[in-house]
Length: 215
Ligand SMILES: Nc1nc2c(ncn2[C@@H]2O[C@H](COP(=O)(O)OP(=O)(O)OP(=O)(O)O)[C@@H](O)[C@H]2O)c(=O)[nH]1
Ligand SMILES: [Mg+2]
Image (tube, rainbow, N blue to C red; front, side, top):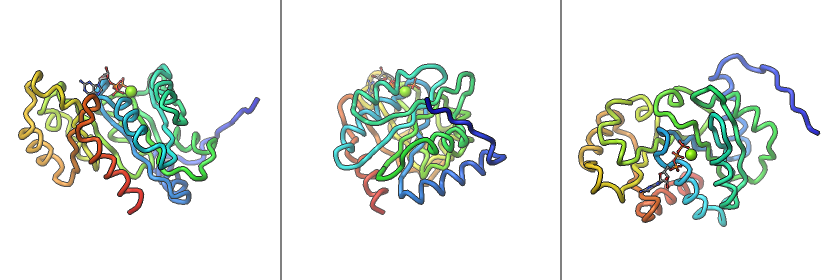
């Protein structure tokens, strides 16, 4: 049996995050930190994304959750390697968790690492994990005013995915209003309108990922 004993090598989250960044850069791996409230569709988006990427690119997934490995099992069903971090009572992943996990993984030949953070629209936004980009996912039933109410996650992210566009007509979600609200909080945000059910908008997101890798 392999037992890994991890000491505190660094002091702060930022120190761990910058070390993670160095490791990922060395291996030329692009890493995305997916943030949203519970149920916005992080795992579903990952399932659909991986189906479209996995034949061309080597992807792995790190799943953050309080208690279970339900999402990791879903990712395994798609045929992609995945790792679980259970935070128990913690409401977010931190860079030390990612650093320690990366030390246990063979990183050769990986193109993309997707990190699904704990479902929470507040705390995870404040913790850099050494990722290349934070991706915030907002689903239409949550409401088009959410960027104004939870500005930090929208300000700290590079990409926003508005998911569940198939539900727009049922939930009084205003597409023009969300564009205005996102712009108010973060004018530089790249936004994709997606439905993981109808697959609308997925190609634009996939193209963005591929360009990010090649660029
Ligand atoms: N109508 C609709 N439902 C969706 C869509 N994407 C995901 N869902 C559903 O939304 C629910 C939650 O999706 P998940 O992918 O588990 O959400 P999550 O963000 O990973 O949730 P946590 O990991 O618990 O934070 C599931 O029932 C999905 O099938 C979509 O585009 N349209
Ligand atoms: Mg999930």
